Amino acid sequence: MKYPDLNSLLQNDLEARKYFDTLPYYAREQISTRAGNVNSFASLKDYAENLLSGD
Image 1: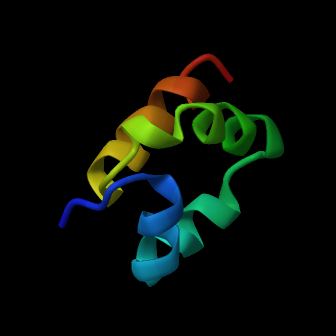
Image 2 (image 1 turned 60 degrees about the horizontal axis):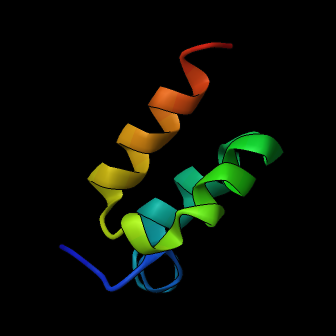
């Protein structure tokens, strides 16, 4: 399911919220700066995996 932005996704998708909350602070911050581009759980996971791939 697609949402308008990250905030809507996190408010309405419990699984996405739980996943987001497990991410390191720096990853959550980076994702938040692109909130308008993160509109589904899949896009959230893709973005997070890209950020974390360098760790």
